[in-house]
Image 1 (cartoon, each protein chain N blue to C red):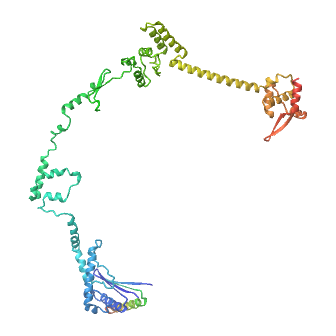
Image 2 (cartoon, each protein chain N blue to C red; image 1 turned 60 degrees about the horizontal axis):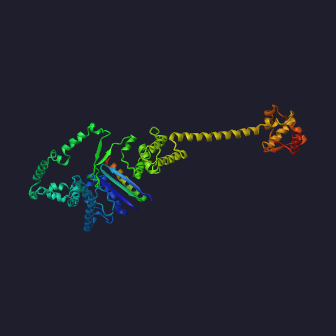
Image 3 (tube, helix red, strand yellow; image 1 turned 120 degrees about the vertical axis):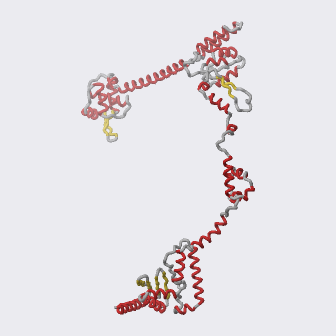
Length: 480
Length: 44
Protein backbone atom coordinates (compact mmCIF):
# COMPACT_ATOMS: atom_id res chain seq x y z
CA UNK A 1 0.00 0.00 0.00
CA UNK A 2 1.23 3.45 -0.79
CA UNK A 3 0.55 6.60 1.23
CA UNK A 4 1.94 10.05 0.63
CA UNK A 5 1.20 13.50 1.90
CA UNK A 6 2.73 16.72 0.59
CA UNK A 7 2.48 20.00 2.47
CA UNK A 8 3.10 23.42 0.96
CA UNK A 9 3.24 26.58 3.01
CA UNK A 10 4.76 29.99 2.24
CA UNK A 11 6.63 28.54 -0.75
CA UNK A 12 8.04 25.77 1.33
CA UNK A 13 7.13 22.18 0.59
CA UNK A 14 7.77 18.95 2.34
CA UNK A 15 6.23 15.58 1.99
CA UNK A 16 5.58 12.55 4.09
CA UNK A 17 6.04 9.34 2.20
CA UNK A 18 5.46 6.15 4.01
CA UNK A 19 3.68 2.86 3.94
CA UNK A 20 2.76 3.34 7.55
CA UNK A 21 -0.90 4.03 7.43
CA UNK A 22 -1.16 5.04 11.07
CA UNK A 23 1.55 7.72 10.89
CA UNK A 24 0.21 9.15 7.67
CA UNK A 25 -3.30 9.23 9.09
CA UNK A 26 -2.25 10.97 12.28
CA UNK A 27 -0.02 13.49 10.57
CA UNK A 28 -2.60 14.20 7.95
CA UNK A 29 -5.17 14.83 10.62
CA UNK A 30 -2.81 17.14 12.38
CA UNK A 31 -1.96 19.14 9.30
CA UNK A 32 -5.55 19.16 8.22
CA UNK A 33 -6.57 20.53 11.58
CA UNK A 34 -3.90 23.20 11.39
CA UNK A 35 -4.80 24.02 7.87
CA UNK A 36 -8.41 24.59 8.63
CA UNK A 37 -7.75 26.02 12.09
CA UNK A 38 -5.17 28.80 12.05
CA UNK A 39 -2.33 29.24 9.60
CA UNK A 40 -0.05 30.68 12.28
CA UNK A 41 -0.31 27.53 14.29
CA UNK A 42 0.52 25.54 11.19
CA UNK A 43 3.64 27.58 10.58
CA UNK A 44 4.80 27.26 14.13
CA UNK A 45 4.17 23.59 13.93
CA UNK A 46 6.28 23.34 10.80
CA UNK A 47 9.15 25.11 12.50
CA UNK A 48 9.33 22.41 15.07
CA UNK A 49 9.46 19.67 12.46
CA UNK A 50 12.80 19.44 10.70
CA UNK A 51 12.37 16.11 9.05
CA UNK A 52 10.02 13.26 9.25
CA UNK A 53 11.29 9.77 9.10
CA UNK A 54 8.76 7.26 8.10
CA UNK A 55 10.36 4.73 10.31
CA UNK A 56 9.77 6.97 13.30
CA UNK A 57 6.53 6.30 14.92
CA UNK A 58 6.04 9.82 16.08
CA UNK A 59 7.68 13.15 15.56
CA UNK A 60 8.60 13.42 19.20
CA UNK A 61 10.52 10.18 19.07
CA UNK A 62 12.30 11.39 15.99
CA UNK A 63 13.35 14.63 17.71
CA UNK A 64 14.94 12.73 20.52
CA UNK A 65 17.06 10.58 18.20
CA UNK A 66 20.46 12.32 17.98
CA UNK A 67 21.85 9.92 15.39
CA UNK A 68 19.01 10.81 13.08
CA UNK A 69 19.75 14.47 13.59
CA UNK A 70 23.33 13.86 12.61
CA UNK A 71 22.18 12.07 9.48
CA UNK A 72 19.90 14.94 8.73
CA UNK A 73 22.79 17.38 8.95
CA UNK A 74 24.86 15.19 6.66
CA UNK A 75 21.99 14.97 4.24
CA UNK A 76 21.60 18.72 4.27
CA UNK A 77 25.29 19.19 3.57
CA UNK A 78 25.20 16.70 0.69
CA UNK A 79 22.15 18.43 -0.65
CA UNK A 80 23.87 21.79 -0.43
CA UNK A 81 26.96 20.44 -2.17
CA UNK A 82 24.95 18.97 -4.98
CA UNK A 83 23.12 22.21 -5.47
CA UNK A 84 26.33 24.22 -5.50
CA UNK A 85 28.10 21.92 -7.94
CA UNK A 86 25.24 21.90 -10.38
CA UNK A 87 25.30 25.07 -12.49
CA UNK A 88 21.97 24.24 -14.06
CA UNK A 89 20.05 24.44 -10.82
CA UNK A 90 17.85 27.48 -10.71
CA UNK A 91 16.88 28.53 -7.24
CA UNK A 92 13.44 29.84 -6.79
CA UNK A 93 11.37 30.81 -3.85
CA UNK A 94 10.10 27.28 -3.64
CA UNK A 95 12.15 24.73 -1.81
CA UNK A 96 13.10 21.56 -3.69
CA UNK A 97 10.89 18.58 -3.26
CA UNK A 98 12.67 15.72 -1.55
CA UNK A 99 10.64 12.61 -1.90
CA UNK A 100 13.11 10.39 -0.18
CA UNK A 101 11.84 8.59 2.84
CA UNK A 102 14.77 9.91 4.84
CA UNK A 103 15.66 13.26 3.36
CA UNK A 104 12.82 15.51 4.22
CA UNK A 105 14.42 18.77 5.16
CA UNK A 106 12.71 21.21 7.36
CA UNK A 107 10.99 24.07 5.78
CA UNK A 108 13.03 26.48 7.78
CA UNK A 109 16.36 25.00 6.77
CA UNK A 110 15.50 24.83 3.15
CA UNK A 111 14.10 28.29 3.17
CA UNK A 112 17.24 29.54 4.79
CA UNK A 113 19.22 28.01 1.99
CA UNK A 114 16.92 29.50 -0.52
CA UNK A 115 17.22 32.89 1.12
CA UNK A 116 20.94 32.64 0.80
CA UNK A 117 20.53 32.22 -2.93
CA UNK A 118 18.68 35.47 -3.08
CA UNK A 119 21.76 37.23 -1.75
CA UNK A 120 23.91 35.55 -4.42
CA UNK A 121 25.87 33.91 -1.72
CA UNK A 122 25.91 30.65 -3.60
CA UNK A 123 27.75 32.09 -6.54
CA UNK A 124 30.68 32.95 -4.36
CA UNK A 125 31.77 29.40 -3.60
CA UNK A 126 31.44 28.53 -7.24
CA UNK A 127 33.77 31.32 -8.22
CA UNK A 128 36.22 30.40 -5.52
CA UNK A 129 36.17 26.88 -6.77
CA UNK A 130 37.02 27.93 -10.29
CA UNK A 131 39.67 30.43 -9.32
CA UNK A 132 42.50 27.96 -8.66
CA UNK A 133 42.26 26.44 -12.10
CA UNK A 134 42.32 29.85 -13.68
CA UNK A 135 45.21 30.96 -11.57
CA UNK A 136 47.23 28.02 -12.79
CA UNK A 137 46.89 29.17 -16.40
CA UNK A 138 46.95 32.92 -16.13
CA UNK A 139 50.00 34.35 -14.47
CA UNK A 140 49.37 36.94 -11.92
CA UNK A 141 50.34 40.39 -13.10
CA UNK A 142 50.72 43.23 -10.73
CA UNK A 143 52.44 46.58 -10.78
CA UNK A 144 55.81 45.10 -9.90
CA UNK A 145 55.72 42.66 -12.77
CA UNK A 146 58.35 43.46 -15.33
CA UNK A 147 57.69 43.51 -19.04
CA UNK A 148 60.39 40.95 -19.58
CA UNK A 149 58.67 38.55 -17.28
CA UNK A 150 55.45 39.09 -19.12
CA UNK A 151 57.16 38.35 -22.40
CA UNK A 152 58.73 35.22 -21.03
CA UNK A 153 55.53 33.98 -19.55
CA UNK A 154 53.60 34.68 -22.75
CA UNK A 155 55.89 33.73 -25.64
CA UNK A 156 55.16 35.44 -28.92
CA UNK A 157 54.15 33.40 -31.96
CA UNK A 158 56.80 32.56 -34.46
CA UNK A 159 55.26 34.94 -36.95
CA UNK A 160 56.32 37.91 -34.83
CA UNK A 161 59.69 36.66 -33.78
CA UNK A 162 61.30 39.65 -35.43
CA UNK A 163 59.94 41.77 -32.65
CA UNK A 164 62.26 39.98 -30.26
CA UNK A 165 65.02 42.23 -31.52
CA UNK A 166 63.01 45.19 -30.46
CA UNK A 167 62.35 43.78 -27.04
CA UNK A 168 65.95 42.73 -26.66
CA UNK A 169 66.92 46.34 -27.04
CA UNK A 170 65.18 47.09 -23.78
CA UNK A 171 67.53 47.25 -20.90
CA UNK A 172 67.21 44.28 -18.65
CA UNK A 173 67.66 46.54 -15.69
CA UNK A 174 64.25 47.90 -16.29
CA UNK A 175 62.72 44.96 -14.53
CA UNK A 176 62.59 47.01 -11.39
CA UNK A 177 60.61 49.74 -13.05
CA UNK A 178 56.93 49.73 -13.04
CA UNK A 179 54.73 49.10 -16.02
CA UNK A 180 54.05 52.77 -16.65
CA UNK A 181 57.74 53.48 -17.08
CA UNK A 182 58.06 50.51 -19.40
CA UNK A 183 55.16 51.69 -21.47
CA UNK A 184 56.80 55.08 -21.80
CA UNK A 185 60.00 53.42 -22.93
CA UNK A 186 58.16 51.41 -25.51
CA UNK A 187 56.47 54.48 -26.86
CA UNK A 188 59.81 56.25 -27.10
CA UNK A 189 61.30 53.35 -29.00
CA UNK A 190 58.39 53.35 -31.37
CA UNK A 191 58.77 57.08 -31.94
CA UNK A 192 62.43 56.59 -32.63
CA UNK A 193 61.62 54.44 -35.61
CA UNK A 194 60.42 56.91 -38.23
CA UNK A 195 58.58 54.85 -40.76
CA UNK A 196 58.06 57.86 -43.01
CA UNK A 197 61.78 58.31 -43.40
CA UNK A 198 62.46 56.82 -46.84
CA UNK A 199 65.96 58.15 -47.27
CA UNK A 200 67.37 54.68 -46.88
CA UNK A 201 65.04 53.30 -49.47
CA UNK A 202 67.22 54.65 -52.22
CA UNK A 203 69.93 52.27 -51.10
CA UNK A 204 67.62 49.37 -51.68
CA UNK A 205 65.93 50.44 -54.83
CA UNK A 206 67.48 51.07 -58.21
CA UNK A 207 69.68 54.05 -58.59
CA UNK A 208 67.82 57.18 -59.50
CA UNK A 209 70.04 57.58 -62.55
CA UNK A 210 69.11 54.12 -63.66
CA UNK A 211 65.47 54.96 -63.20
CA UNK A 212 65.89 57.98 -65.40
CA UNK A 213 67.49 55.77 -68.00
CA UNK A 214 64.55 53.47 -67.86
CA UNK A 215 62.23 56.40 -68.28
CA UNK A 216 64.07 57.64 -71.34
CA UNK A 217 64.18 54.14 -72.75
CA UNK A 218 60.44 53.76 -72.59
CA UNK A 219 59.91 56.67 -74.95
CA UNK A 220 58.24 55.75 -78.20
CA UNK A 221 61.18 56.85 -80.34
CA UNK A 222 63.44 54.32 -78.73
CA UNK A 223 60.92 51.56 -79.12
CA UNK A 224 60.72 52.02 -82.88
CA UNK A 225 63.39 49.91 -84.51
CA UNK A 226 64.76 50.50 -87.90
CA UNK A 227 65.36 47.57 -90.23
CA UNK A 228 69.04 48.25 -90.20
CA UNK A 229 69.29 48.52 -86.46
CA UNK A 230 71.46 46.01 -84.73
CA UNK A 231 70.35 44.89 -81.34
CA UNK A 232 73.06 43.88 -78.99
CA UNK A 233 71.87 41.29 -76.57
CA UNK A 234 74.00 39.97 -73.78
CA UNK A 235 73.13 36.41 -73.07
CA UNK A 236 73.30 35.38 -69.42
CA UNK A 237 74.92 32.06 -70.27
CA UNK A 238 78.44 31.72 -68.94
CA UNK A 239 79.76 30.31 -72.20
CA UNK A 240 78.86 33.45 -74.05
CA UNK A 241 79.24 35.73 -71.15
CA UNK A 242 81.68 38.03 -72.87
CA UNK A 243 80.32 37.65 -76.37
CA UNK A 244 78.06 40.06 -78.11
CA UNK A 245 75.59 38.26 -80.29
CA UNK A 246 74.40 40.32 -83.17
CA UNK A 247 70.90 39.74 -84.39
CA UNK A 248 70.32 41.49 -87.67
CA UNK A 249 66.83 42.49 -88.55
CA UNK A 250 65.20 39.85 -90.69
CA UNK A 251 64.38 41.05 -94.15
CA UNK A 252 61.90 39.35 -96.38
CA UNK A 253 63.87 40.01 -99.49
CA UNK A 254 65.15 36.67 -100.60
CA UNK A 255 68.08 38.22 -102.35
CA UNK A 256 69.52 39.09 -98.99
CA UNK A 257 70.63 35.50 -98.80
CA UNK A 258 73.37 36.55 -101.17
CA UNK A 259 75.00 38.12 -98.16
CA UNK A 260 75.93 34.67 -97.02
CA UNK A 261 79.56 34.10 -97.73
CA UNK A 262 79.26 30.82 -99.56
CA UNK A 263 82.41 29.03 -100.24
CA UNK A 264 82.17 27.11 -103.44
CA UNK A 265 84.02 24.21 -101.93
CA UNK A 266 81.69 23.89 -98.92
CA UNK A 267 78.59 22.46 -100.47
CA UNK A 268 77.48 20.59 -97.39
CA UNK A 269 77.25 23.78 -95.39
CA UNK A 270 75.08 25.29 -98.04
CA UNK A 271 72.83 22.27 -97.87
CA UNK A 272 72.51 22.82 -94.15
CA UNK A 273 71.59 26.41 -94.72
CA UNK A 274 69.07 25.31 -97.24
CA UNK A 275 67.53 22.86 -94.79
CA UNK A 276 67.34 25.49 -92.10
CA UNK A 277 65.32 27.77 -94.31
CA UNK A 278 62.37 25.37 -93.89
CA UNK A 279 62.16 24.59 -97.56
CA UNK A 280 60.62 27.93 -98.25
CA UNK A 281 63.55 30.08 -99.20
CA UNK A 282 65.16 30.25 -102.55
CA UNK A 283 68.82 30.45 -103.07
CA UNK A 284 69.85 32.95 -105.64
CA UNK A 285 70.29 31.69 -109.15
CA UNK A 286 73.86 32.75 -109.37
CA UNK A 287 74.84 30.74 -106.35
CA UNK A 288 72.90 27.74 -107.61
CA UNK A 289 74.68 27.92 -110.90
CA UNK A 290 77.95 28.31 -109.19
CA UNK A 291 77.24 25.29 -107.05
CA UNK A 292 76.06 23.30 -110.01
CA UNK A 293 79.21 24.06 -111.88
CA UNK A 294 81.41 22.59 -109.21
CA UNK A 295 79.25 19.72 -108.05
CA UNK A 296 77.70 18.51 -111.30
CA UNK A 297 74.23 19.52 -110.17
CA UNK A 298 73.93 16.52 -107.89
CA UNK A 299 74.46 17.94 -104.44
CA UNK A 300 72.07 20.83 -104.41
CA UNK A 301 68.45 20.20 -103.75
CA UNK A 302 66.09 22.78 -105.07
CA UNK A 303 63.06 23.04 -102.86
CA UNK A 304 59.81 24.04 -104.37
CA UNK A 305 58.29 27.17 -102.98
CA UNK A 306 54.56 27.41 -102.78
CA UNK A 307 54.63 31.14 -103.18
CA UNK A 308 53.92 31.60 -106.87
CA UNK A 309 54.78 35.28 -106.80
CA UNK A 310 58.33 34.61 -105.79
CA UNK A 311 58.69 31.49 -107.77
CA UNK A 312 61.52 31.44 -110.25
CA UNK A 313 60.86 29.68 -113.50
CA UNK A 314 63.02 26.62 -113.86
CA UNK A 315 63.22 27.22 -117.54
CA UNK A 316 65.09 30.41 -116.75
CA UNK A 317 67.29 28.45 -114.39
CA UNK A 318 68.16 25.94 -117.05
CA UNK A 319 68.78 28.66 -119.58
CA UNK A 320 70.99 30.43 -117.07
CA UNK A 321 72.85 27.21 -116.47
CA UNK A 322 73.56 26.88 -120.15
CA UNK A 323 74.64 30.49 -120.41
CA UNK A 324 76.92 30.09 -117.46
CA UNK A 325 78.40 26.91 -118.85
CA UNK A 326 79.33 28.54 -122.12
CA UNK A 327 80.50 31.75 -120.47
CA UNK A 328 82.68 29.99 -117.93
CA UNK A 329 86.41 30.53 -117.90
CA UNK A 330 87.13 26.97 -118.85
CA UNK A 331 89.24 26.82 -121.95
CA UNK A 332 88.27 23.29 -122.85
CA UNK A 333 85.34 23.59 -125.26
CA UNK A 334 84.83 19.85 -125.32
CA UNK A 335 84.25 19.84 -121.61
CA UNK A 336 81.70 22.66 -122.03
CA UNK A 337 79.84 20.67 -124.65
CA UNK A 338 79.82 17.57 -122.50
CA UNK A 339 78.48 19.46 -119.52
CA UNK A 340 75.91 21.27 -121.63
CA UNK A 341 74.75 18.11 -123.36
CA UNK A 342 74.48 16.36 -120.04
CA UNK A 343 72.35 19.16 -118.73
CA UNK A 344 70.19 19.20 -121.84
CA UNK A 345 69.75 15.46 -121.67
CA UNK A 346 68.62 15.75 -118.08
CA UNK A 347 66.20 18.50 -119.03
CA UNK A 348 64.81 16.50 -121.94
CA UNK A 349 64.61 13.20 -120.11
CA UNK A 350 63.24 14.48 -116.85
CA UNK A 351 62.32 18.10 -117.26
CA UNK A 352 61.51 19.79 -113.99
CA UNK A 353 58.08 21.32 -114.37
CA UNK A 354 57.10 24.57 -112.81
CA UNK A 355 54.34 24.69 -110.23
CA UNK A 356 51.89 26.05 -112.77
CA UNK A 357 52.85 23.31 -115.19
CA UNK A 358 52.49 20.80 -112.42
CA UNK A 359 48.97 22.02 -111.67
CA UNK A 360 48.11 22.04 -115.35
CA UNK A 361 49.34 18.48 -115.72
CA UNK A 362 47.28 17.40 -112.76
CA UNK A 363 44.22 19.09 -114.16
CA UNK A 364 44.78 17.50 -117.53
CA UNK A 365 45.15 14.09 -115.96
CA UNK A 366 42.00 14.64 -113.97
CA UNK A 367 40.17 15.73 -117.06
CA UNK A 368 41.40 12.72 -118.94
CA UNK A 369 40.32 10.36 -116.22
CA UNK A 370 36.94 12.04 -116.01
CA UNK A 371 36.56 11.82 -119.78
CA UNK A 372 37.35 8.13 -119.66
CA UNK A 373 34.84 7.58 -116.93
CA UNK A 374 32.20 9.53 -118.81
CA UNK A 375 32.83 7.66 -122.02
CA UNK A 376 32.68 4.33 -120.24
CA UNK A 377 29.49 5.30 -118.54
CA UNK A 378 27.92 6.45 -121.79
CA UNK A 379 28.89 3.28 -123.57
CA UNK A 380 27.34 1.17 -120.83
CA UNK A 381 24.17 3.21 -121.00
CA UNK A 382 24.11 2.88 -124.78
CA UNK A 383 24.53 -0.85 -124.52
CA UNK A 384 21.69 -1.02 -122.04
CA UNK A 385 19.58 1.11 -124.33
CA UNK A 386 20.38 -1.21 -127.23
CA UNK A 387 19.54 -4.18 -125.03
CA UNK A 388 16.22 -2.64 -124.10
CA UNK A 389 15.46 -1.55 -127.64
CA UNK A 390 12.92 -4.14 -128.78
CA UNK A 391 12.08 -1.96 -131.71
CA UNK A 392 15.56 -2.54 -133.15
CA UNK A 393 15.21 -6.28 -132.53
CA UNK A 394 11.73 -6.41 -134.08
CA UNK A 395 12.87 -4.60 -137.19
CA UNK A 396 14.72 -7.71 -138.28
CA UNK A 397 11.48 -9.59 -138.76
CA UNK A 398 8.86 -8.98 -141.44
CA UNK A 399 5.57 -9.23 -139.60
CA UNK A 400 2.70 -6.92 -138.70
CA UNK A 401 0.50 -9.29 -136.76
CA UNK A 402 0.25 -8.72 -133.09
CA UNK A 403 0.39 -12.41 -132.28
CA UNK A 404 3.73 -12.74 -134.04
CA UNK A 405 5.04 -9.58 -132.39
CA UNK A 406 4.02 -10.96 -128.99
CA UNK A 407 5.87 -14.22 -129.67
CA UNK A 408 8.96 -12.37 -130.91
CA UNK A 409 8.93 -10.15 -127.83
CA UNK A 410 8.62 -13.12 -125.52
CA UNK A 411 11.62 -14.70 -127.29
CA UNK A 412 13.44 -11.34 -126.95
CA UNK A 413 12.77 -11.17 -123.25
CA UNK A 414 14.02 -14.64 -122.57
CA UNK A 415 17.05 -14.79 -124.85
CA UNK A 416 18.11 -11.13 -125.07
CA UNK A 417 17.05 -9.74 -121.74
CA UNK A 418 17.60 -13.11 -120.09
CA UNK A 419 14.41 -12.99 -118.08
CA UNK A 420 12.62 -16.26 -117.60
CA UNK A 421 9.14 -14.79 -117.30
CA UNK A 422 7.31 -11.56 -117.89
CA UNK A 423 4.12 -9.87 -117.02
CA UNK A 424 1.59 -8.49 -119.47
CA UNK A 425 2.50 -4.99 -118.41
CA UNK A 426 6.22 -5.49 -119.12
CA UNK A 427 5.76 -7.15 -122.56
CA UNK A 428 3.16 -4.62 -123.64
CA UNK A 429 5.52 -1.76 -122.73
CA UNK A 430 8.10 -3.22 -125.12
CA UNK A 431 5.57 -3.94 -127.88
CA UNK A 432 4.03 -0.46 -127.55
CA UNK A 433 7.45 1.21 -127.87
CA UNK A 434 8.13 -0.76 -131.07
CA UNK A 435 4.75 -0.90 -132.79
CA UNK A 436 2.37 1.39 -130.92
CA UNK A 437 0.03 -1.48 -130.27
CA UNK A 438 -0.95 -3.43 -127.17
CA UNK A 439 -1.60 -7.15 -127.03
CA UNK A 440 -4.79 -8.21 -125.28
CA UNK A 441 -5.63 -11.44 -123.49
CA UNK A 442 -7.03 -13.02 -126.63
CA UNK A 443 -3.55 -13.05 -128.15
CA UNK A 444 -2.09 -14.56 -125.02
CA UNK A 445 -4.83 -17.18 -124.74
CA UNK A 446 -4.33 -18.12 -128.39
CA UNK A 447 -0.58 -18.56 -127.91
CA UNK A 448 -1.23 -20.58 -124.76
CA UNK A 449 -3.61 -22.78 -126.69
CA UNK A 450 -0.97 -23.28 -129.38
CA UNK A 451 1.52 -24.25 -126.69
CA UNK A 452 3.97 -21.48 -127.51
CA UNK A 453 3.47 -19.54 -124.29
CA UNK A 454 2.65 -20.82 -120.82
CA UNK A 455 1.66 -19.20 -117.58
CA UNK A 456 3.91 -19.21 -114.55
CA UNK A 457 2.79 -18.19 -111.07
CA UNK A 458 5.55 -16.48 -109.10
CA UNK A 459 4.86 -15.09 -105.62
CA UNK A 460 1.15 -15.06 -106.29
CA UNK A 461 1.61 -13.14 -109.51
CA UNK A 462 0.54 -14.62 -112.83
CA UNK A 463 3.33 -14.29 -115.37
CA UNK A 464 4.14 -15.74 -118.77
CA UNK A 465 7.09 -17.31 -120.51
CA UNK A 466 7.81 -18.71 -123.92
CA UNK A 467 7.88 -22.50 -124.18
CA UNK A 468 10.31 -24.68 -126.05
CA UNK A 469 7.73 -25.20 -128.77
CA UNK A 470 7.39 -21.44 -129.05
CA UNK A 471 11.15 -21.01 -129.46
CA UNK A 472 11.17 -23.79 -132.08
CA UNK A 473 8.31 -22.18 -133.93
CA UNK A 474 10.09 -18.80 -133.71
CA UNK A 475 13.28 -20.29 -135.07
CA UNK A 476 11.59 -22.19 -137.88
CA UNK A 477 9.40 -19.34 -139.00
CA UNK A 478 11.57 -16.23 -138.67
CA UNK A 479 15.12 -17.53 -139.00
CA UNK A 480 14.24 -19.27 -142.24
CA UNK B 1 -2.93 -0.42 -9.56
CA UNK B 2 -4.96 2.77 -9.22
CA UNK B 3 -3.52 5.84 -7.50
CA UNK B 4 -5.67 8.51 -5.87
CA UNK B 5 -4.43 12.06 -5.47
CA UNK B 6 -6.33 14.80 -3.64
CA UNK B 7 -5.26 18.38 -3.17
CA UNK B 8 -6.69 20.68 -0.53
CA UNK B 9 -5.82 24.33 -0.61
CA UNK B 10 -6.61 27.17 1.76
CA UNK B 11 -4.83 30.41 1.27
CA UNK B 12 -1.12 29.79 1.19
CA UNK B 13 -1.49 26.33 2.62
CA UNK B 14 -1.75 23.25 0.43
CA UNK B 15 -2.04 19.61 1.34
CA UNK B 16 -1.65 16.90 -1.30
CA UNK B 17 -2.74 13.48 -0.31
CA UNK B 18 -2.03 10.47 -2.51
CA UNK B 19 -2.42 6.76 -1.99
CA UNK B 20 -3.31 3.59 -3.81
CA UNK B 21 -5.49 2.39 -0.94
CA UNK B 22 -8.97 3.27 -2.02
CA UNK B 23 -10.56 2.40 1.35
CA UNK B 24 -8.09 4.56 3.26
CA UNK B 25 -8.61 7.49 0.90
CA UNK B 26 -12.34 7.15 1.22
CA UNK B 27 -12.26 7.05 5.03
CA UNK B 28 -9.80 9.94 5.28
CA UNK B 29 -11.75 12.16 2.94
CA UNK B 30 -14.95 11.35 4.73
CA UNK B 31 -13.39 12.23 8.07
CA UNK B 32 -12.01 15.52 6.74
CA UNK B 33 -15.31 16.38 5.19
CA UNK B 34 -17.05 15.85 8.55
CA UNK B 35 -14.49 18.02 10.35
CA UNK B 36 -14.92 20.76 7.78
CA UNK B 37 -18.67 20.56 8.17
CA UNK B 38 -18.27 20.73 11.94
CA UNK B 39 -16.10 23.81 11.62
CA UNK B 40 -18.65 25.52 9.43
CA UNK B 41 -21.45 24.54 11.80
CA UNK B 42 -19.54 25.88 14.75
CA UNK B 43 -18.75 29.15 12.96
CA UNK B 44 -22.38 29.55 11.99
